[in-house]
Image 1 (cartoon, rainbow, N blue to C red):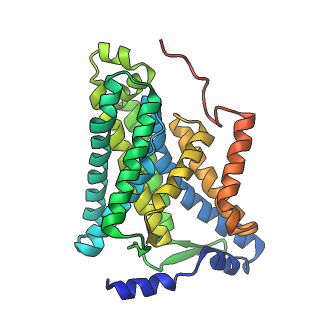
Image 2 (image 1 turned 90 degrees about the vertical axis):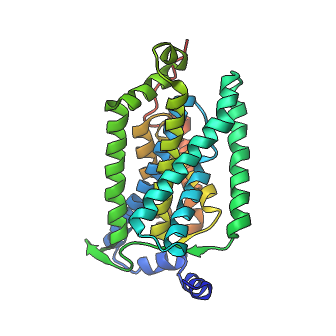
Length: 322
């Protein structure tokens, strides 16, 4: 798509506040249904990203600041493959997921693994992920610029009305795909040998290594899976909003962290619950109060929940590893 046409299209996209005002013209129940649908679709995207975030924390007890960056990198790779290389959507999707997952693996192998091998404190790895995230963001800024770009999507402009709510085909597609991927991830963690190795490493990495588990391979696989899930979340989210810029990763990183902590950090079911709740809270705040307060409301709820239940909604008591 030519740059002038793309910029013209972006400038003609109505901001969220205008869409909300249009939505408020619906009947109360119709408007409620519309916000609920929007919240579930947005929450499904957050949940996918939060699973990857929670997975890394469960294995390494590490807050991974590169997670939001993987979200942004993967979404941009899909855009490049589709718009600049004219590849089919399905091939662009697979390549973006694989390449970003490989990037996540390389970040762990070449930056975090040496720190882990030297038995240095976890905060050293945390600082390292912050530095890597800033480095990647600046490289992307150098080559792609900071402008907002129009994002390719599926089922453009097609929607269906259910109970007065206009549900786009892409929202239905994203929710269905999110459910399938969450179920597949749960089966993988619970039933596969690699998943059982992840759970063993999460419980006690030293004992897992003594039992013959290749801990380095498990941790690398965990970072690959986390980056892949962040990429899928990024692609689906940008398809819904029809735009992308370099700050997308920062925003989703904050929301993913909030969703993970709200549900119970380290708990995959908690990550799903937290993501859905954050999405619903945001959309209802934007719809009934103000779109300017949507981010604040999500974090206010997070603070209240943590005061009442510090471990999160589904968090379990922390057991000291010996």
